Length: 241
Image (cartoon, rainbow, N blue to C red):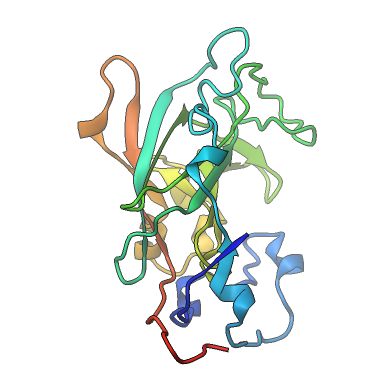
């Protein structure tokens, strides 16, 4: 089912993204396109998207501490992540689907291809989902992920991070990325983060400690706001297509 909201999206600014070819991030050499990108006009495929409702979600979908717990609670630092999803014009993006996935406290993913020596946690699945409310607000609870080594160069480590995917009211707003945690010393040395053009853009991917919302004797809190593309205007009697 798709919800149709007429209106074209603002043009994407490619300067907001790192270059596809960045040899310091080794796998980008094979993944990057060899020819210039082609700009295409928006069609129904870009301005519509699936529609989600709260009754499709379970009570623990946004609680990664409890949603896979079986014989006890997962090990690690408990954290709450919250923030707002807005478009580039500052308007709240409501009813957007936000999915998250991550490594556990030892830096290991619950995936058969992850053979890192960090231990698996039988009570932690590492994935969850939620929807934004009328104000674009989201919140979830989890275990802070650990860093882990990766085969980019010798002895390189990824900083703690959480992957996220957003689907809003149009595929032109589709976003898949990851965010990091304020104060992590591995952030400045990560080859992936160093592909981002400016310090301001790098800071936009860092969740900030929100001490005013710590839960006493339980959890620390971080705030991470997300910006998606916005629609320029609403069309009424004239056809977009």
